[in-house]
Length: 223
Image (cartoon, rainbow, N blue to C red):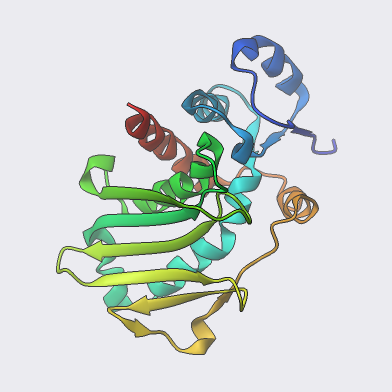
C-alpha cells in the first residue's frame, strides 16, 4: 500500500515505449528531469503517459519553477490585476543558455508559458504571442532569468531574478512592488527537488494541465 515512484535518469528512450510503460505498471508516479530531454517527443510522451496510464508524471524542472509561479500568482492576487489575466497578449521569457543550445534548456520557459496559458483560461496558444530567448550564462543552464508580460492596454509586468540577492523581484508598469512581495529563489539541487516532489505522492493537476500546452508550444517552435 506504499506509494511507488520510478525516477528515470536522463533522456526518455522514445524507441522503447513498451519497455518503459511495463516498468510503470506498478508505479504511482514517474519522476523525470526534462532539462536532460533532447526532443519534443519526450514532452509529448510524458503527456501521453498522463492520459493513457494510471502513472502520474512529475518533473524536477516543474518544481524548479515553484518560486516563479508563486511570484506570478502574487502579482494577480489583487482584483484589478486579476482582470488583466485574460488580456495577456505577449509573453517574453528569457532563460540561461549555458553556452549551448539544447532542447532541455528551453523547457522551464515552455512550462511557465504553458502554465500562464492555462491559468489565463486562453483556449488556443495562438491567442498569446510568445517570445523565448536563451542568454549566454554558464550557471544553472535553462533557469529562468526574466519574464515580461504585455497586455492589451500596452501595460506590462516584469519578473526578474536578482542573482546577487537570490530573489525574484517584480514590477507593474515600471513600479517595483514593496519588499514584502519579493520572492526568494528556492534551491535547485537534485536532492532538494526530489524531496519536495516525494512529499506530494499524488498527481500535480496543474502540471498535468500545463504539460500538453508546453508540448504544443515546443512543437510549434521546432516546426
